[in-house]
Each structure stands twice: as structure tokens, then as C-alpha cells.
Amino acid sequence: MEAVAALERDAELMLRVREGDETSFALLLERHRAPVVHFLYRMVQNQAVSEELAQEVFLRVYRSRATYEPTAKFTTWLFRIATHLALNWIRDGKKEKSQESLNEELLDGAERQVPDRQPTVEQELLYAVKLNEVRRAIETLPEKQRAAVMMHKYEELDYAQIAKALRCSESAVKSLLFRAYETLRSRLAHMA
Image (cartoon, rainbow, N blue to C red):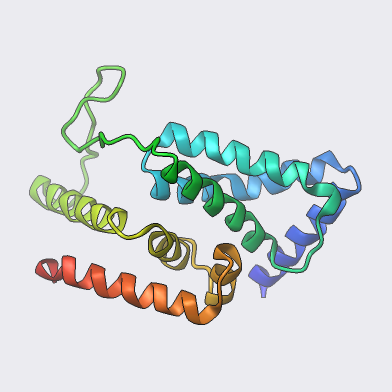
């Protein structure tokens, strides 16, 4: 019930933005910036680029304020813009090939710190290796399959929302997800 109310508030806020209310835009930005950056990071695997693309997403939202109509959920519209920008960036070949690993140094020369928690160092490293392997497997999926998986698993969007974001039918989304999950199950079978 609360989630539905929040979604309705998003559309109401965007309608206020359309009428020139800057505070409503700030509220939308505050509410959705982190999930959009997180989604974009999973798509492009580069924090600086994901921040830049997120800025462009919200710039496009703001520029589209005069023509906004709440025909779909605000988040569906928002993630459609984010997906489009991420796929364009990937297609433009700007994707950096280097990935930061657990043992590499950070840009400022400081070493990555692993917090001291109850699991042993070996358990932490094993978890990090498995997580990295899952991320790499997702990264090798075709672009639309990857976008569908990211929206389905990480952003918890339903088939209808994903279909609108990717501009395809719900059955196409189900097919994309089926193929993606089959590929991932095959590539990650050794981890089961």
C-alpha cells in the first residue's frame, strides 16, 4: 500500500514539476537518484560514467516536464530513459575495459579496506569472487537481456514496466529473461 502511494506521489510530483514547482523536482531527484545511479553502474560498470549518465537522465526528465503525461508509472519512464542512455553509451564503444578488483589499489593510492566482520577473511574473499563472477556473467549477456535482468532482479520492476522501458511486449521481456537466466544458470552452474 505504501509503495503504491509512493508511486502515485511520484506522478503527482512530476505533474507539479510540469507546472514549474522546483521543490517537487528536487524531491524526485532525492528519491530516485541513488537507484538510477546504481542501475546505471550495473549496466556500464563505471562509477564516474554512471554518475554522469544519471545526471543526463534527470536533465532529460526536467527538459520533458512540459510534455509529461502520467500514462505509465514514473519509475518506468525514468528507467526507460536510463536504459536508453546506458545502451547508447555501451554501443558507442566508450566502455572501459579495466575493472577494479578486490586487490587493486584505488585511484588515490589507498588500498581497499575489507571491514572486519564475523565471517572469516576466506569467506569474505570467496563471496567477493563469486559476486564478481556473477557480475561478469551478467556483463557478457546481450545488451537487452542484461538490461532486462538488471531491471527485474536489482530494480524489482515487473514485466510490464520492463516492457515499457525496453519498448517491447511483455512476452518479449519474458523471453529475454528466460534466455538470460538460462545462460546465467549454464555459466554459473559450477557455483551451485
